[in-house]
Length: 279
Image 1 (cartoon, rainbow, N blue to C red):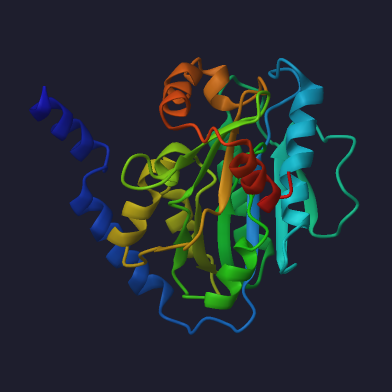
Image 2 (cartoon, rainbow, N blue to C red):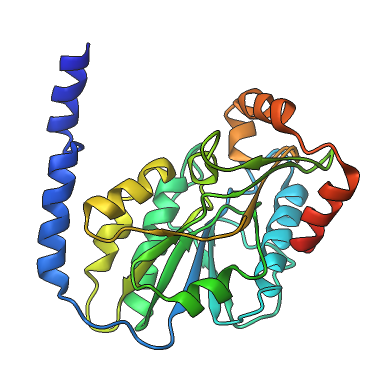
């Protein structure tokens, strides 16, 4: 079975050697321009359609909470792009927030199509460098995350390895951190990859390579662009509101096992953590 799996990976171009080769070609094509002094943090959010959601009001409420976490950033140099079939009625009136009409029908799982549309839009329209962060429409970012990325500005990217798993309905939470359960292996809102679209579009290729959030850090390292960990718990992975992708796929019970085993039970500690994220 292992031999068959290895052959299949080879035919699909998914081996590490093939990834490293694509990375070398990409580096030759893009060159090595120095990063600017004013990077932009770009949040790219695929949004489920109204027809495919079980509760559209909950979807839009979750998105509002996510956008509110962006609006709470102590450094306001960011933009958010939301791609979906249906524009929410209550999007904040902020020039940094843009809705893109999805070009695809609302298949059950069209997140990959929206991801590709978001990447193409940024590559065509944004003539800046910065950090591209795919973000789920229900997770919460720490208020200091953008400030850290722009202040440190390593020209490669950042990884959220530490954060919290939060059951929204019950206000229960547990840490997601190494070595037990790194945040980036559980949650897709966990990597900010440096891109430079000032003079070319080659960096869209690196973003397109990221099909699974569990391999983003590994792929970036293979392509010669290793990510640095943000040195504090930088995001909340939100579930328990009925519209998380894990819930729609029926995998919530696996996540709740971690919550049961590692829950922070002190009300004071829980409230302090949530307050740090503005909740």
